[in-house]
Image (cartoon, rainbow, N blue to C red; front, side):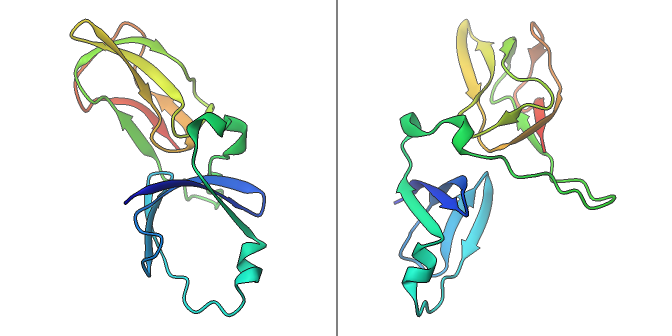
Length: 151
């Protein structure tokens, strides 16, 4: 059973989906990236518990200020990973809720897409900073077209 949890590590919060908390290694998704974590033999669990706080994820309790997007890599000549947010189906962009430079977290509104006379709010699937917006209001798009890129 997949569980969504909020993990706070050294004062920074992350939204994490954990497939099986009792497995070793633990398979999880952090900001859309698959991660495998091995805890190994922990001799002093209290040392870990003092640094990590794990809470069940409750969307109503999480404010966007609680979750920080990963900092883009700043090494010379090495850009951070870019993730493209794409349209799930053909339609027309009704509104865009973000602009370049905005920080988003999972669940934030990205845009409203009208398809077959129904409006669908598209929401961020991972955290990041809006690098570039590829569409504009009123534009017709196809399924799979880039809407925006996150860094």
